[in-house]
Image 1 (tube, rainbow, N blue to C red):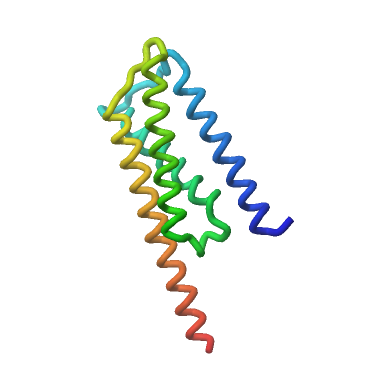
Image 2 (image 1 turned 60 degrees about the vertical axis):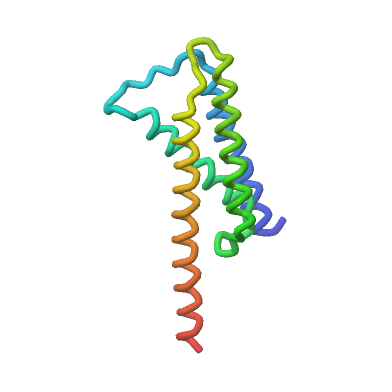
Length: 136
């Protein structure tokens, strides 16, 4: 088993476990979280689905420096659809509700994290490319 395949399997397992944890918490009738500030719920959605998108991206790619736009699109589509599915699913759970605000927070987290990964990935790739040119 090659290094890339082992890394891929690892991230797929982490993504599946993380998705299951989100689903389990979405399935509970009421999740009691102490409110420290207004909008905390939306920040939690933002971060939770941003991390989900990052894990999707890591699971889809062979090497972190060779991410293609297609990987970003698949991570975006899968994470947004998963977030929408969870919101629709919560409509049927007692004491839970469907919320467009949560879908928006999920989507903004996903998009933000993917943009950040894209920026850092390109900076790292440019740095490696520059170092390669400097050594020649």
